[in-house]
Image (cartoon, rainbow, N blue to C red; front, side, top):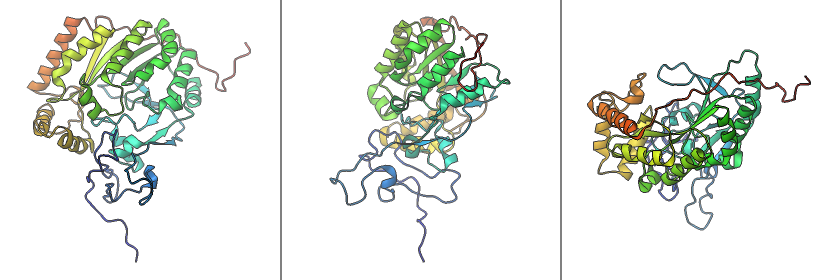
Length: 377
């Protein structure tokens, strides 16, 4: 009788050459899977990942390919009522993120599709190709009430695949047409592609953009955020947006105790020099399988500091790897977290950040026609 796949330890590292340019070192089973599975060198389904079949090719390991599938859900605006999040609705047009940031708190969302928080999250993407049409339909609903839409709060809207997909640009065109305010967070220089739309919306007080910068160390950024823009490119994006009149800020996020917290002041200084007006921060969050993924990454990329980093993370998370409580999850608790808060506030005050926080205008909103046609009168 044919036996099923063996139940093996899920955290078998994937060959480093095959995962070149990826953040995760492993591809563990999702927490909703009924049995453990392993995706290691000898257990991958090569064709599914875009690799040559065993015995084919030139003998060199091929990199793991990125695949994009259609996201067929029929809504695009997500609502939340979390008391520690400063927005009530958001758009996430691409599930998964090719940037591969090892610390990404959004990784566990892939487990709802039977996929892994590891390499699956970085390589198996789902995109709403009809995002503009879905958005038009929701904005045209007579019951819709205009509030700022946040984009980039889960996965990055300007990740590499956006160059081909163009989904974010079509979303911005729809929002601009309706005079709808939007806040954007990204790690990508690709946001400057849409500076024409963003600058026009800025004249109507309809947009604000934040660039997320985790480190100024190119080597650390390469290892930690392998397919995101380099730190200098992110600063260039801040400068380009500021020069175009787009309100732009900096997110020092996430702050990882013992790894990049020493850079808080230098990141803020570089962003201010580039033209950033506002600044925010978040502390690293390690929900569900992300905590084990991050530990595996530390063991490979920062073995000498791995124990110290995890000890400091637990010190700001009430002795745990992760603290999911509202408010605490963003800021942490304890003396070390308080020191980070004080350093951040002091630097922001010295540099002149957050003196003005202009509220985006919701009064100009005009619903689109449901079918995209212009009204006769």
